[in-house]
Image (cartoon, rainbow, N blue to C red; front, side, top):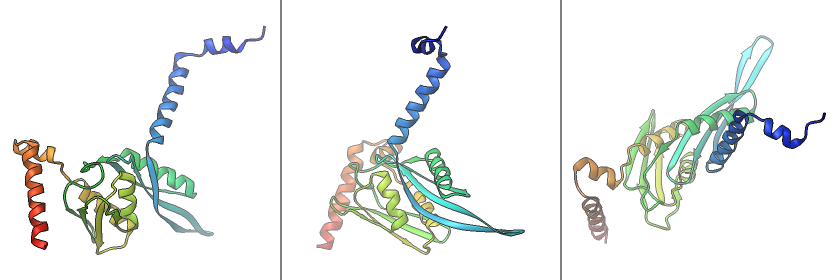
Length: 203
């Protein structure tokens, strides 16, 4: 006796349905991330009989709402290297507080190896003023206005790591207020007053 499709559907175990649900949830989770390929490098290993080529990829992944991560992957083929780097970036994401959802809360410096970076908050309409690897970080993170400068190196790996070293040191007024047992309004008022004084001095 032939089985009907309804009978086959009813005989599926709950584990199969759970697996299908996990795949759907993972697909939805992947859709919310934006990834950018920052750098790809061909490396060669000399073996008996010639050279064996492989590819190293550097990828930045973000959700456009303050979360961002980077990863590096190496494989014999480019797509596989990018896949490895993307998976690593998603595992090591960090959350960065944003001011008004568009820029950084304050200026900050970071370094890694010979790389030194300076990240500065900017008024609305400034845009992203940054170099290639750093621009990819800000675009995937959701920053709209920022001014950034990197000195000391042009290595994309060191530039990315120095940028993340700076980003993890950014604090929001809420975090500072909690540390100092003050109100958020006191922290924000002091920051705005200092900015206004600096603007008046320039004029």
